[in-house]
Length: 208
Image 1 (cartoon, rainbow, N blue to C red):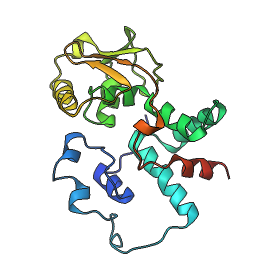
Image 2: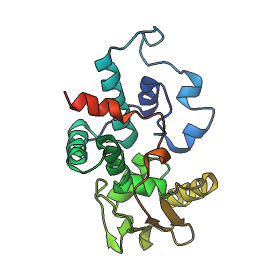
Image 3: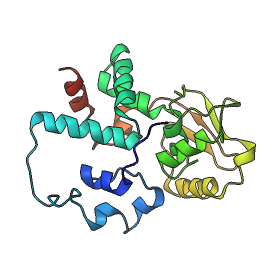
């Protein structure tokens, strides 16, 4: 399975904001953005102005890094969003948010999306009682996502659930921490997703 192996803290620094790729570390003073909030590399501290195309490209790269998808996957998701009724940009984000690895992350089964993806890959997640090990599987509203019985004692899953419970869960998922299960209630509204994401720039980029 192809994946992005670039250091996660460098990815955050390149985009100039926290992408929450390192789990609990992102909430501490050890976060790279807190220490060095400028792009990596020897020319990172030099200020430069981006062209319109450059801004569109950077936004696409940022969204790709947040959700951990590669270029071909992202393009396919965009085409799927473009074919659906409604606003293409919002459709794009809702599809990304309904991926099983992202849903598992929001339910607290992994400290980061990459950890949640690994948990899915290791056959630790059930959807409606059936084992699913495909991170890109699209969860539908009303689906029940839970930790498999053989993974309930994993320390990483337990600690991640505790941390997520302390920070509260998103409104579009309902989680029962004791049973290690949750319901994907609905696709999130645009107002419930980060305001720092500008999906319209991605739509402009792919519309050329």
